[in-house]
Length: 341
Image (cartoon, rainbow, N blue to C red; front, side, top):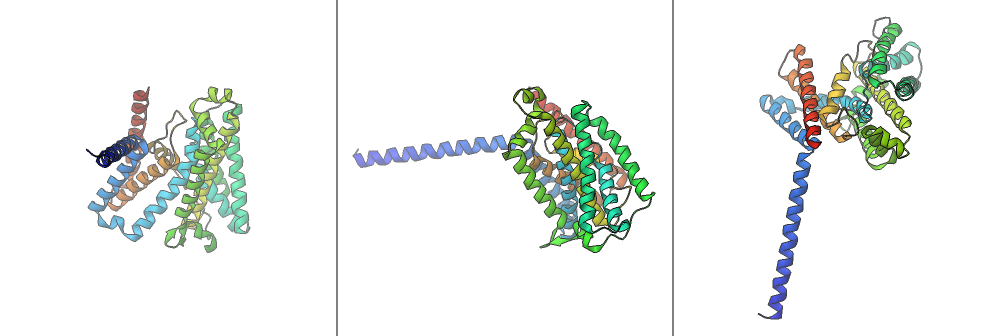
């Protein structure tokens, strides 16, 4: 065999080895990806959309897609806020009530008090920021579980809505404000654009900043985080503030969508937000999950609710279905953690 032939044989063997190595690495990476909760839930989402489309082709109609994406985006915003508290091994049960309070306050400031739209929005956000700060201080300084203090707020905020409105919705929000809930930009609903911006910002915060890593550390092992020099209290307070602000933003969007500030808005919405988080891969034990998973979880809940409406399933069954989905997600989380242990 000549030197040229020998060289060609070696080159071919090397190329074949590299190709096999690449295929092996790719297969391994795909296999690991398919094992992640996010990928599994994404496949579930695709299956749900496919089944719903086969049962009722109008499911992928333009009008219904606008409704579906808007509803999922609004839930996604609330889910991201809820997710921050779950990441630090807490929970926020006041999401639905703060949602209602946010919508009522912005309508009160703009309609009843005659303030400019920007001033009404800013004042509402500042008030709700204070509520989130109080939550965080109770959790960190008094060592009270988030379940308890947000349970109190759930009742107080709902009562505040009734006091402000005297039980009647505040109507006649200006059209220029209602764009936040009803408008479109390049045929994309405004709430979807807002959700995309929050999703991108949250992804960057949690994945690429020290604050994000410290939030995961605070939720995963609070003692180890303390010993590592992490200001755990500041990170927990930040998470509860973000949760309150996200719920408030959802309330303001819903007020614009309905053109009213309704004291009864958001009833039971905390269940949907928590379900979106747990279905998306977050753990009640804290320190696990991603914002992408929350977005997928919100999509699954949105598709389920929309499909049930399209199939004319009685509204009485909706809460039962969402509750069972939450149960399955919790069981999945417990099984996954036990296998990991």
